[in-house]
Length: 378
Image (cartoon, rainbow, N blue to C red; front, side, top):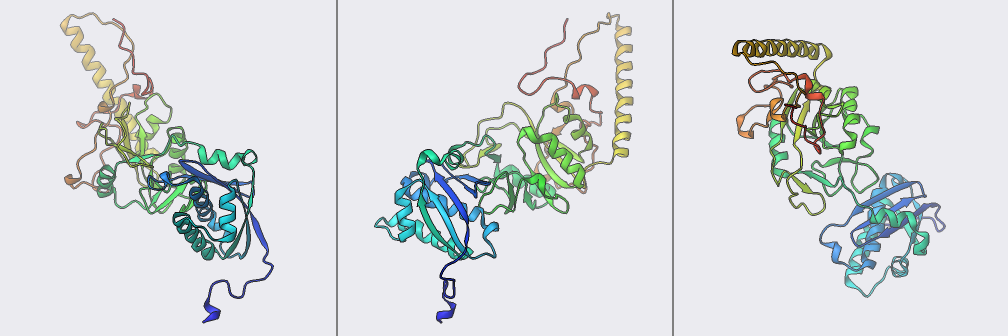
């Protein structure tokens, strides 16, 4: 029936919802809503070879999907500003002799019908489209993810993860994910602005956000699987290992991480990575205090035993620099998925060796993964 057709019953002079400015580059797209909210992303391998005019129209569609939460429940006219005259005429006239461009127009029309908005495009000179152009061309150094095989192994050990807290639409490992700016399909922008409680969180953050991630897990009493570099020189490393319910080293291999856009295996990382498992915020302070006391006693017994052996052997005692222990001295390799152990059955205190030895207190003092520790002076 005519009443069921989309567009019937709309106002002849709809209200203006706002202005959306977009742009596209050979590898990515970007835009901003009302000069306030940015959105950006990358094209997959297939659309990368398309003509730039097709990418300009696709950028409008991706920005509409990214700002869908601002458009839901509202109906009106959305002003578009693009720096391609071809894209402007194609969107306004909804016609093109190019089959590829016409196919992209149909996708854009479906999104506009979904949000019940009418589109009206205007041309903006490229020299004035600075912000959208920058968003479309910016790179992302954090556009990588753990390999599917290793993630599946962690899924078997810790259960199905529900939310990927630091992701993009191209590298997300969970159906629900958070991004650092608006993007199609994101559940929330800025993972630190939402609660992590009540979820089985997958957290593979940028290295610069490691301290904030650990504070967020503790504050929200969150259950999370966190991937971090073995960076013993940082102040957050020792407390992270002490509070985690489980901590394991990830294997050193060329396929450990993959690129988000191409999903190609990345080269072997220059330093080791560890996976830390936190259950309801990690171990309590009382449990950590008991483990620290046990570690101090074990260190004391080990030092006394070594000094006694040196005296008995007649060797001269010589004081030198403490060496930062290797990661294998504090953490063990991740067991294979066929071992049958899970987070609920394995509760070995994190920060101990496989034989039960305590994590040396010097593990919090040393060099970063980029600068290995110096040998002791003779």
